[in-house]
Structure formats: structure tokens, C-alpha cells
Length: 121
Image (tube, rainbow, N blue to C red; front, side, top):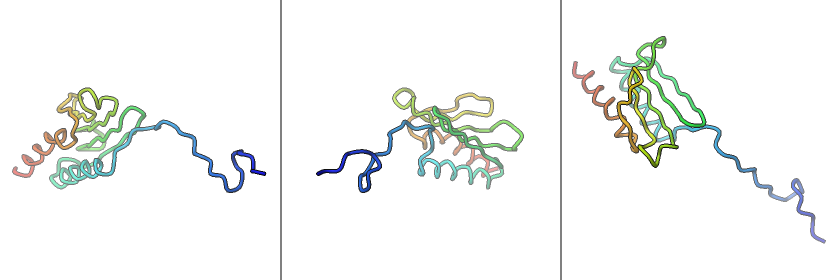
């Protein structure tokens, strides 16, 4: 006689209940790209601190000149906008949108240019 198909029976594999993601995060390659820029900006003396925030709607990386100030730059990943204007957004110090797009490298380009200017001075 066959064993009953009840969860918890020895030797039976029970699938893990499927759930939606609780929060949006950065993939390893994305985070490496962002932290690479952060490290170069720290070396240039532009940034000194950073913060990350992960919610259901967005993942945010904020870079600060000083800890007590508002962020000098904020990079946001919002997957819900992937099919529209792009899931990546770069915000300036006063909350203005500096760049939006589908590719992280293109969105970070204004900060890369700022880094080149900081190194030349």
C-alpha cells in the first residue's frame, strides 16, 4: 500500500510556499557599479558617507558630502517603471531628476562627468 501524500511524511519533498518579493534590491553587478563610483567620489573628496534604503517599490542609494546634510546624489531603482521611462533615476541634491533611463551606466554618466571635473581641479 502506498503512503498517504501528506506534508511532513518522511522522504516526501514539500515545496516552499511561493510569495512575492517583500522588497526591491540591487543586483551584485549594479551595486558594484554604484559602489565603484562612490569609491572614486570619496577619493576625489566629493562624498564621505552613503545610505541605502530598500522598500517594496524601490531600492535607493544616497551619497552624502556630510552625514548631517541631505544627499548630494540619489540613485533609485524602481522596477515598476521598467516598461515606461526606465527603472533607473538619478536625483540631484534638491530632489530634481537629473537623468532617467533603462541602463544604469547611462544614468550614472552625469556623476561620472562631475568626477572628471573634480579630478581636474
